[in-house]
Length: 489
Image 1 (cartoon, rainbow, N blue to C red):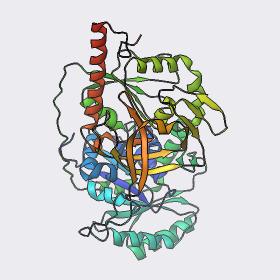
Image 2: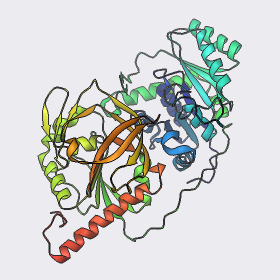
Image 3: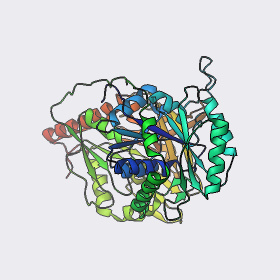
Image 4: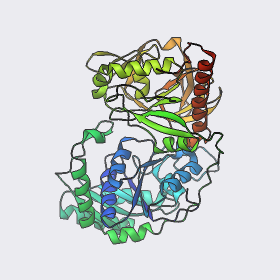
Protein backbone atom coordinates (compact mmCIF):
# COMPACT_ATOMS: atom_id res chain seq x y z
CA UNK A 1 0.00 0.00 0.00
CA UNK A 2 1.26 3.48 -0.85
CA UNK A 3 2.27 5.58 2.15
CA UNK A 4 1.02 8.71 0.36
CA UNK A 5 -1.23 9.04 -2.68
CA UNK A 6 -0.24 11.98 -4.85
CA UNK A 7 -1.43 10.48 -8.13
CA UNK A 8 -3.59 12.78 -10.34
CA UNK A 9 -7.23 11.82 -9.94
CA UNK A 10 -10.76 12.91 -10.75
CA UNK A 11 -14.20 12.14 -9.35
CA UNK A 12 -16.96 11.97 -11.97
CA UNK A 13 -20.17 13.12 -10.27
CA UNK A 14 -23.60 13.89 -11.64
CA UNK A 15 -26.91 15.57 -10.95
CA UNK A 16 -28.58 12.18 -10.53
CA UNK A 17 -28.72 8.59 -11.72
CA UNK A 18 -28.83 8.25 -15.49
CA UNK A 19 -26.93 11.47 -16.15
CA UNK A 20 -24.10 9.62 -17.92
CA UNK A 21 -21.48 9.24 -15.17
CA UNK A 22 -20.57 5.74 -16.30
CA UNK A 23 -20.30 6.75 -19.95
CA UNK A 24 -18.03 9.69 -19.13
CA UNK A 25 -15.95 7.59 -16.70
CA UNK A 26 -15.50 4.87 -19.32
CA UNK A 27 -14.68 7.45 -21.98
CA UNK A 28 -12.11 9.21 -19.79
CA UNK A 29 -10.53 5.87 -18.86
CA UNK A 30 -10.27 4.79 -22.50
CA UNK A 31 -9.00 8.20 -23.65
CA UNK A 32 -6.32 8.34 -20.95
CA UNK A 33 -5.20 4.79 -21.71
CA UNK A 34 -4.89 5.79 -25.37
CA UNK A 35 -2.45 8.47 -24.17
CA UNK A 36 -0.35 5.79 -22.53
CA UNK A 37 -1.61 6.32 -18.97
CA UNK A 38 -2.10 3.45 -16.53
CA UNK A 39 -5.58 4.13 -15.18
CA UNK A 40 -7.02 2.75 -11.96
CA UNK A 41 -10.79 3.01 -11.61
CA UNK A 42 -12.94 3.23 -8.49
CA UNK A 43 -16.68 3.35 -7.84
CA UNK A 44 -18.35 5.25 -5.01
CA UNK A 45 -20.74 3.04 -3.05
CA UNK A 46 -21.57 -0.64 -3.17
CA UNK A 47 -22.24 -1.12 -6.90
CA UNK A 48 -20.97 -4.28 -8.62
CA UNK A 49 -22.20 -3.76 -12.21
CA UNK A 50 -20.56 -0.40 -12.92
CA UNK A 51 -17.34 -1.74 -11.40
CA UNK A 52 -17.29 -4.57 -13.95
CA UNK A 53 -17.50 -2.05 -16.82
CA UNK A 54 -14.83 0.17 -15.27
CA UNK A 55 -12.51 -2.78 -14.67
CA UNK A 56 -12.98 -3.89 -18.28
CA UNK A 57 -12.11 -0.42 -19.55
CA UNK A 58 -9.00 -0.03 -17.37
CA UNK A 59 -7.83 -3.67 -17.50
CA UNK A 60 -7.36 -3.45 -13.72
CA UNK A 61 -9.73 -4.53 -10.92
CA UNK A 62 -12.08 -1.69 -10.01
CA UNK A 63 -12.47 -0.96 -6.30
CA UNK A 64 -15.33 0.43 -4.25
CA UNK A 65 -14.89 3.57 -2.16
CA UNK A 66 -17.81 3.31 0.25
CA UNK A 67 -17.60 5.81 3.10
CA UNK A 68 -20.64 4.36 4.90
CA UNK A 69 -19.34 0.80 4.95
CA UNK A 70 -15.61 1.49 5.29
CA UNK A 71 -15.36 4.85 7.05
CA UNK A 72 -12.88 7.54 6.01
CA UNK A 73 -9.80 5.50 6.97
CA UNK A 74 -11.03 2.49 5.02
CA UNK A 75 -11.71 4.63 1.95
CA UNK A 76 -8.19 6.07 2.04
CA UNK A 77 -6.68 2.59 2.51
CA UNK A 78 -8.65 1.28 -0.46
CA UNK A 79 -7.53 4.21 -2.59
CA UNK A 80 -3.88 3.72 -1.64
CA UNK A 81 -3.95 -0.02 -2.19
CA UNK A 82 -5.67 0.21 -5.56
CA UNK A 83 -3.45 3.04 -6.81
CA UNK A 84 -0.27 0.94 -6.76
CA UNK A 85 1.19 0.89 -10.27
CA UNK A 86 -1.23 3.50 -11.67
CA UNK A 87 -0.54 7.07 -12.78
CA UNK A 88 -4.14 8.29 -13.17
CA UNK A 89 -7.23 7.55 -11.02
CA UNK A 90 -10.84 7.85 -12.22
CA UNK A 91 -13.55 7.60 -9.57
CA UNK A 92 -17.15 7.25 -10.71
CA UNK A 93 -19.68 8.69 -8.28
CA UNK A 94 -23.05 7.30 -7.20
CA UNK A 95 -26.50 8.82 -7.85
CA UNK A 96 -26.39 12.63 -7.51
CA UNK A 97 -23.18 14.11 -6.21
CA UNK A 98 -24.79 15.15 -2.88
CA UNK A 99 -26.97 12.05 -2.47
CA UNK A 100 -26.13 9.92 0.55
CA UNK A 101 -27.97 9.23 3.78
CA UNK A 102 -29.43 12.64 4.46
CA UNK A 103 -27.90 15.56 6.28
CA UNK A 104 -25.61 14.71 9.17
CA UNK A 105 -27.31 14.53 12.58
CA UNK A 106 -23.97 15.19 14.31
CA UNK A 107 -24.30 18.65 15.95
CA UNK A 108 -20.56 19.21 15.45
CA UNK A 109 -20.73 18.47 11.71
CA UNK A 110 -20.78 21.11 9.03
CA UNK A 111 -24.18 22.14 7.72
CA UNK A 112 -22.97 21.05 4.28
CA UNK A 113 -21.84 17.54 5.19
CA UNK A 114 -23.57 14.85 3.11
CA UNK A 115 -22.72 11.49 4.71
CA UNK A 116 -22.18 8.64 2.28
CA UNK A 117 -22.27 10.91 -0.77
CA UNK A 118 -19.93 11.20 -3.72
CA UNK A 119 -18.93 14.65 -2.48
CA UNK A 120 -17.99 13.23 0.93
CA UNK A 121 -15.76 10.64 -0.74
CA UNK A 122 -14.17 13.37 -2.88
CA UNK A 123 -13.36 15.34 0.29
CA UNK A 124 -11.91 12.22 1.96
CA UNK A 125 -9.57 11.45 -0.95
CA UNK A 126 -8.72 15.06 -1.80
CA UNK A 127 -9.94 14.79 -5.40
CA UNK A 128 -11.48 17.39 -7.72
CA UNK A 129 -14.98 16.68 -9.01
CA UNK A 130 -16.40 17.18 -12.48
CA UNK A 131 -20.20 17.29 -12.81
CA UNK A 132 -21.85 15.37 -15.65
CA UNK A 133 -24.99 17.07 -16.97
CA UNK A 134 -27.36 15.33 -19.38
CA UNK A 135 -28.10 18.06 -21.93
CA UNK A 136 -30.85 16.24 -23.82
CA UNK A 137 -33.78 17.72 -21.90
CA UNK A 138 -32.32 20.71 -20.05
CA UNK A 139 -30.97 24.15 -20.85
CA UNK A 140 -30.08 27.08 -18.63
CA UNK A 141 -31.48 25.24 -15.61
CA UNK A 142 -28.26 23.23 -15.62
CA UNK A 143 -26.46 26.39 -14.48
CA UNK A 144 -28.70 26.69 -11.42
CA UNK A 145 -27.97 23.10 -10.44
CA UNK A 146 -24.22 23.59 -10.94
CA UNK A 147 -24.27 26.83 -8.94
CA UNK A 148 -26.21 25.24 -6.06
CA UNK A 149 -23.80 22.30 -5.85
CA UNK A 150 -20.83 24.68 -5.98
CA UNK A 151 -22.22 26.70 -3.07
CA UNK A 152 -22.86 23.57 -0.99
CA UNK A 153 -19.38 22.20 -1.68
CA UNK A 154 -17.55 23.41 1.43
CA UNK A 155 -14.15 22.18 0.21
CA UNK A 156 -14.36 23.67 -3.26
CA UNK A 157 -13.93 20.28 -4.90
CA UNK A 158 -16.27 20.82 -7.87
CA UNK A 159 -14.13 22.32 -10.61
CA UNK A 160 -16.07 21.96 -13.86
CA UNK A 161 -18.83 20.40 -15.92
CA UNK A 162 -18.94 17.90 -18.77
CA UNK A 163 -22.09 17.91 -20.87
CA UNK A 164 -23.37 14.54 -22.04
CA UNK A 165 -25.94 13.53 -24.62
CA UNK A 166 -25.89 16.98 -26.29
CA UNK A 167 -28.55 17.15 -29.04
CA UNK A 168 -27.00 19.98 -31.09
CA UNK A 169 -24.47 22.84 -31.06
CA UNK A 170 -27.11 25.42 -30.13
CA UNK A 171 -28.02 23.56 -26.93
CA UNK A 172 -24.35 23.19 -26.08
CA UNK A 173 -23.72 26.94 -26.44
CA UNK A 174 -26.79 27.85 -24.36
CA UNK A 175 -25.82 25.59 -21.46
CA UNK A 176 -22.11 26.40 -21.62
CA UNK A 177 -22.75 30.16 -21.56
CA UNK A 178 -25.22 29.84 -18.67
CA UNK A 179 -22.90 27.68 -16.56
CA UNK A 180 -19.96 30.04 -17.05
CA UNK A 181 -21.97 33.24 -16.56
CA UNK A 182 -24.06 32.13 -13.55
CA UNK A 183 -21.98 29.41 -11.86
CA UNK A 184 -18.52 30.63 -12.89
CA UNK A 185 -17.53 27.08 -13.80
CA UNK A 186 -15.87 25.90 -17.02
CA UNK A 187 -17.46 23.36 -19.32
CA UNK A 188 -14.62 20.92 -19.93
CA UNK A 189 -16.32 18.96 -22.67
CA UNK A 190 -19.58 18.28 -24.46
CA UNK A 191 -20.26 14.80 -25.81
CA UNK A 192 -22.93 14.55 -28.48
CA UNK A 193 -25.69 12.00 -28.43
CA UNK A 194 -24.02 8.81 -29.74
CA UNK A 195 -26.67 6.54 -31.23
CA UNK A 196 -24.27 3.65 -31.82
CA UNK A 197 -23.13 3.23 -28.19
CA UNK A 198 -24.90 0.25 -26.64
CA UNK A 199 -24.82 0.16 -22.82
CA UNK A 200 -28.48 -0.66 -22.08
CA UNK A 201 -29.94 0.17 -18.69
CA UNK A 202 -32.23 -1.99 -16.59
CA UNK A 203 -34.50 -0.63 -13.89
CA UNK A 204 -31.79 -1.47 -11.37
CA UNK A 205 -28.82 -0.11 -13.33
CA UNK A 206 -26.71 -1.04 -16.33
CA UNK A 207 -27.08 -4.31 -18.19
CA UNK A 208 -24.52 -6.67 -16.62
CA UNK A 209 -21.23 -6.63 -18.50
CA UNK A 210 -21.26 -10.33 -19.38
CA UNK A 211 -24.66 -9.93 -21.06
CA UNK A 212 -23.56 -6.99 -23.22
CA UNK A 213 -21.92 -8.13 -26.48
CA UNK A 214 -21.19 -4.54 -27.56
CA UNK A 215 -19.12 -3.45 -24.58
CA UNK A 216 -15.74 -3.21 -26.32
CA UNK A 217 -17.12 -1.18 -29.21
CA UNK A 218 -18.98 1.10 -26.80
CA UNK A 219 -15.90 1.79 -24.65
CA UNK A 220 -13.75 2.46 -27.72
CA UNK A 221 -16.31 4.89 -29.16
CA UNK A 222 -16.70 6.69 -25.84
CA UNK A 223 -12.93 7.04 -25.60
CA UNK A 224 -12.80 8.54 -29.09
CA UNK A 225 -15.66 10.92 -28.20
CA UNK A 226 -13.91 12.15 -25.04
CA UNK A 227 -10.68 12.69 -26.97
CA UNK A 228 -12.52 14.68 -29.66
CA UNK A 229 -15.05 16.63 -27.60
CA UNK A 230 -13.32 17.22 -24.22
CA UNK A 231 -10.30 19.35 -23.32
CA UNK A 232 -8.29 16.37 -22.13
CA UNK A 233 -5.13 18.44 -21.59
CA UNK A 234 -7.00 20.75 -19.20
CA UNK A 235 -8.69 17.81 -17.47
CA UNK A 236 -5.31 16.22 -16.79
CA UNK A 237 -3.95 19.49 -15.40
CA UNK A 238 -6.96 19.75 -13.09
CA UNK A 239 -6.43 16.15 -11.98
CA UNK A 240 -2.92 17.11 -10.94
CA UNK A 241 -4.46 19.52 -8.42
CA UNK A 242 -5.60 16.62 -6.21
CA UNK A 243 -4.11 16.99 -2.76
CA UNK A 244 -1.84 14.26 -1.33
CA UNK A 245 -3.60 11.73 0.91
CA UNK A 246 -1.85 9.78 3.68
CA UNK A 247 -3.90 6.66 4.54
CA UNK A 248 -3.83 4.93 7.89
CA UNK A 249 -1.77 1.76 7.59
CA UNK A 250 -3.43 -1.60 7.51
CA UNK A 251 -2.87 -3.48 10.73
CA UNK A 252 -0.20 -6.06 10.01
CA UNK A 253 -1.09 -9.57 11.11
CA UNK A 254 1.88 -11.90 11.26
CA UNK A 255 1.08 -15.22 9.56
CA UNK A 256 0.64 -18.05 12.03
CA UNK A 257 1.35 -20.78 9.48
CA UNK A 258 3.96 -21.23 6.79
CA UNK A 259 1.57 -22.83 4.31
CA UNK A 260 -1.51 -20.99 3.02
CA UNK A 261 -4.91 -22.59 3.43
CA UNK A 262 -6.93 -23.17 0.25
CA UNK A 263 -10.21 -21.26 0.04
CA UNK A 264 -12.42 -22.09 -2.93
CA UNK A 265 -14.19 -19.12 -4.56
CA UNK A 266 -17.06 -19.60 -7.01
CA UNK A 267 -16.30 -17.39 -9.99
CA UNK A 268 -18.05 -17.50 -13.36
CA UNK A 269 -20.88 -15.76 -15.22
CA UNK A 270 -23.34 -16.62 -12.43
CA UNK A 271 -21.04 -15.81 -9.49
CA UNK A 272 -19.32 -12.53 -10.23
CA UNK A 273 -20.22 -10.09 -7.42
CA UNK A 274 -17.12 -9.81 -5.25
CA UNK A 275 -15.29 -6.86 -3.80
CA UNK A 276 -11.75 -7.19 -5.19
CA UNK A 277 -10.30 -6.40 -1.79
CA UNK A 278 -12.17 -9.25 -0.11
CA UNK A 279 -10.07 -11.77 -2.00
CA UNK A 280 -6.87 -9.79 -1.44
CA UNK A 281 -7.54 -9.54 2.30
CA UNK A 282 -8.12 -13.29 2.47
CA UNK A 283 -4.75 -13.80 0.78
CA UNK A 284 -3.10 -11.35 3.18
CA UNK A 285 -4.55 -13.37 6.08
CA UNK A 286 -3.01 -16.60 4.81
CA UNK A 287 -5.37 -17.97 2.14
CA UNK A 288 -4.64 -19.33 -1.30
CA UNK A 289 -7.62 -18.46 -3.52
CA UNK A 290 -8.75 -21.35 -5.73
CA UNK A 291 -11.52 -20.42 -8.19
CA UNK A 292 -14.10 -22.85 -9.54
CA UNK A 293 -17.24 -22.65 -11.70
CA UNK A 294 -20.57 -24.10 -10.58
CA UNK A 295 -21.70 -23.60 -14.20
CA UNK A 296 -18.87 -25.47 -15.93
CA UNK A 297 -17.03 -27.70 -13.46
CA UNK A 298 -18.10 -31.21 -12.50
CA UNK A 299 -16.46 -31.34 -9.06
CA UNK A 300 -15.02 -28.95 -6.49
CA UNK A 301 -11.25 -28.62 -6.12
CA UNK A 302 -9.75 -30.88 -3.46
CA UNK A 303 -8.27 -29.97 -0.08
CA UNK A 304 -10.34 -26.83 0.49
CA UNK A 305 -10.57 -25.35 3.96
CA UNK A 306 -13.59 -23.16 3.14
CA UNK A 307 -15.94 -22.41 0.23
CA UNK A 308 -16.87 -18.78 -0.57
CA UNK A 309 -20.00 -18.46 -2.72
CA UNK A 310 -20.48 -14.83 -3.77
CA UNK A 311 -23.22 -12.89 -5.48
CA UNK A 312 -24.54 -12.81 -9.00
CA UNK A 313 -27.20 -11.02 -10.99
CA UNK A 314 -29.18 -13.00 -13.58
CA UNK A 315 -31.71 -15.77 -13.08
CA UNK A 316 -30.98 -16.78 -16.68
CA UNK A 317 -28.22 -19.01 -15.30
CA UNK A 318 -30.42 -20.84 -12.78
CA UNK A 319 -31.45 -23.71 -15.12
CA UNK A 320 -27.79 -24.38 -15.99
CA UNK A 321 -26.76 -24.33 -12.35
CA UNK A 322 -29.57 -26.73 -11.40
CA UNK A 323 -28.81 -29.09 -14.28
CA UNK A 324 -25.12 -29.46 -13.36
CA UNK A 325 -25.96 -32.39 -11.10
CA UNK A 326 -22.42 -33.66 -10.71
CA UNK A 327 -21.20 -30.36 -9.31
CA UNK A 328 -24.23 -30.01 -7.01
CA UNK A 329 -23.46 -33.46 -5.61
CA UNK A 330 -19.78 -32.58 -5.18
CA UNK A 331 -20.80 -29.40 -3.33
CA UNK A 332 -23.16 -31.33 -1.01
CA UNK A 333 -20.63 -34.10 -0.35
CA UNK A 334 -17.75 -31.70 0.35
CA UNK A 335 -19.83 -29.72 2.82
CA UNK A 336 -21.09 -32.93 4.47
CA UNK A 337 -17.47 -33.94 4.99
CA UNK A 338 -16.85 -30.83 7.06
CA UNK A 339 -15.90 -28.01 4.67
CA UNK A 340 -17.59 -24.79 5.86
CA UNK A 341 -19.42 -22.51 3.43
CA UNK A 342 -19.70 -18.72 3.50
CA UNK A 343 -22.45 -17.67 1.06
CA UNK A 344 -23.72 -14.23 0.02
CA UNK A 345 -26.60 -13.34 -2.32
CA UNK A 346 -26.61 -15.80 -5.18
CA UNK A 347 -24.51 -18.11 -3.00
CA UNK A 348 -27.42 -18.35 -0.55
CA UNK A 349 -29.83 -19.12 -3.40
CA UNK A 350 -27.52 -21.86 -4.68
CA UNK A 351 -27.29 -23.35 -1.18
CA UNK A 352 -31.08 -23.41 -0.72
CA UNK A 353 -33.29 -26.46 -1.17
CA UNK A 354 -35.10 -25.03 -4.20
CA UNK A 355 -35.23 -21.83 -6.23
CA UNK A 356 -38.36 -20.68 -8.05
CA UNK A 357 -37.64 -18.38 -10.97
CA UNK A 358 -39.96 -15.59 -12.10
CA UNK A 359 -41.49 -17.81 -14.81
CA UNK A 360 -42.81 -20.11 -12.08
CA UNK A 361 -40.35 -22.95 -12.70
CA UNK A 362 -38.94 -24.64 -9.57
CA UNK A 363 -35.30 -25.73 -9.67
CA UNK A 364 -33.73 -28.09 -7.14
CA UNK A 365 -30.57 -26.58 -5.72
CA UNK A 366 -27.89 -27.85 -3.32
CA UNK A 367 -30.09 -28.13 -0.22
CA UNK A 368 -27.40 -27.21 2.30
CA UNK A 369 -29.96 -25.09 4.11
CA UNK A 370 -33.60 -26.24 4.31
CA UNK A 371 -35.23 -23.20 2.74
CA UNK A 372 -37.10 -22.56 -0.49
CA UNK A 373 -36.52 -19.26 -2.28
CA UNK A 374 -38.49 -17.43 -4.97
CA UNK A 375 -37.17 -14.83 -7.39
CA UNK A 376 -39.60 -12.04 -8.26
CA UNK A 377 -38.43 -9.38 -10.72
CA UNK A 378 -40.76 -6.73 -9.31
CA UNK A 379 -39.67 -6.94 -5.66
CA UNK A 380 -36.28 -5.36 -5.08
CA UNK A 381 -34.71 -5.47 -1.61
CA UNK A 382 -31.94 -2.92 -1.67
CA UNK A 383 -30.01 -0.67 0.70
CA UNK A 384 -27.32 -0.41 3.31
CA UNK A 385 -27.71 -2.63 6.36
CA UNK A 386 -26.39 -2.17 9.90
CA UNK A 387 -25.83 -5.66 11.31
CA UNK A 388 -25.22 -7.25 14.68
CA UNK A 389 -24.11 -10.87 14.70
CA UNK A 390 -26.98 -12.73 16.40
CA UNK A 391 -25.34 -16.15 16.73
CA UNK A 392 -21.60 -16.66 17.12
CA UNK A 393 -20.29 -17.74 13.75
CA UNK A 394 -17.27 -17.83 11.47
CA UNK A 395 -17.48 -14.01 11.23
CA UNK A 396 -17.16 -13.41 14.96
CA UNK A 397 -18.86 -13.59 18.35
CA UNK A 398 -22.46 -12.58 18.98
CA UNK A 399 -22.84 -8.83 19.22
CA UNK A 400 -20.13 -7.99 16.67
CA UNK A 401 -21.26 -5.00 14.59
CA UNK A 402 -20.91 -5.06 10.81
CA UNK A 403 -22.11 -3.03 7.86
CA UNK A 404 -23.27 -4.47 4.55
CA UNK A 405 -25.38 -3.95 1.47
CA UNK A 406 -28.48 -5.81 0.29
CA UNK A 407 -29.52 -6.09 -3.37
CA UNK A 408 -31.77 -8.92 -4.52
CA UNK A 409 -35.22 -9.87 -5.81
CA UNK A 410 -35.71 -12.88 -3.53
CA UNK A 411 -38.05 -13.88 -0.76
CA UNK A 412 -38.48 -17.04 1.30
CA UNK A 413 -41.25 -19.48 0.50
CA UNK A 414 -40.61 -21.80 3.44
CA UNK A 415 -38.14 -23.01 6.00
CA UNK A 416 -36.62 -19.82 7.38
CA UNK A 417 -38.02 -20.06 10.91
CA UNK A 418 -36.24 -23.34 11.69
CA UNK A 419 -32.71 -21.90 11.46
CA UNK A 420 -30.43 -19.79 13.66
CA UNK A 421 -30.32 -16.22 12.39
CA UNK A 422 -26.93 -14.86 11.37
CA UNK A 423 -27.75 -11.21 12.10
CA UNK A 424 -30.18 -8.79 13.58
CA UNK A 425 -30.53 -5.99 11.07
CA UNK A 426 -31.32 -2.26 10.84
CA UNK A 427 -31.29 0.05 7.85
CA UNK A 428 -28.76 2.87 7.66
CA UNK A 429 -31.19 5.22 9.44
CA UNK A 430 -31.49 2.87 12.41
CA UNK A 431 -34.92 1.42 11.60
CA UNK A 432 -35.17 -2.26 12.70
CA UNK A 433 -35.58 -4.82 9.91
CA UNK A 434 -35.66 -8.01 11.98
CA UNK A 435 -33.38 -11.03 11.62
CA UNK A 436 -31.45 -12.02 8.52
CA UNK A 437 -29.34 -14.89 7.29
CA UNK A 438 -28.77 -18.38 8.64
CA UNK A 439 -25.85 -19.97 10.38
CA UNK A 440 -24.62 -23.20 11.95
CA UNK A 441 -21.06 -24.33 12.81
CA UNK A 442 -20.28 -25.04 9.13
CA UNK A 443 -22.44 -22.49 7.32
CA UNK A 444 -23.18 -18.80 7.11
CA UNK A 445 -25.59 -17.79 4.37
CA UNK A 446 -27.02 -14.31 3.92
CA UNK A 447 -28.43 -11.94 1.33
CA UNK A 448 -26.08 -9.25 2.68
CA UNK A 449 -22.79 -8.48 0.93
CA UNK A 450 -19.93 -7.55 3.26
CA UNK A 451 -16.80 -5.59 2.42
CA UNK A 452 -14.05 -7.19 4.52
CA UNK A 453 -12.12 -3.92 4.56
CA UNK A 454 -14.49 -2.51 7.19
CA UNK A 455 -12.88 -4.60 9.94
CA UNK A 456 -9.42 -5.99 9.45
CA UNK A 457 -10.15 -9.13 11.48
CA UNK A 458 -12.98 -10.35 9.21
CA UNK A 459 -10.81 -12.03 6.60
CA UNK A 460 -8.62 -13.50 9.33
CA UNK A 461 -11.63 -15.11 11.00
CA UNK A 462 -12.65 -16.82 7.76
CA UNK A 463 -9.09 -18.05 7.20
CA UNK A 464 -9.01 -19.34 10.80
CA UNK A 465 -12.30 -21.16 10.16
CA UNK A 466 -10.75 -22.76 7.08
CA UNK A 467 -7.69 -23.94 9.04
CA UNK A 468 -9.82 -25.32 11.85
CA UNK A 469 -11.91 -27.32 9.40
CA UNK A 470 -8.78 -28.85 7.87
CA UNK A 471 -7.44 -29.69 11.33
CA UNK A 472 -10.72 -31.37 12.35
CA UNK A 473 -10.77 -33.50 9.23
CA UNK A 474 -7.11 -34.45 9.64
CA UNK A 475 -7.74 -35.50 13.25
CA UNK A 476 -10.80 -37.48 12.18
CA UNK A 477 -8.70 -39.36 9.62
CA UNK A 478 -6.03 -40.13 12.22
CA UNK A 479 -8.69 -41.33 14.65
CA UNK A 480 -10.26 -43.49 11.95
CA UNK A 481 -13.69 -41.88 12.24
CA UNK A 482 -16.08 -42.01 9.31
CA UNK A 483 -17.84 -38.84 10.39
CA UNK A 484 -18.84 -35.73 8.48
CA UNK A 485 -15.34 -34.47 9.24
CA UNK A 486 -13.67 -37.15 7.13
CA UNK A 487 -11.72 -36.06 4.08
CA UNK A 488 -13.78 -35.42 0.94
CA UNK A 489 -13.67 -38.13 -1.66
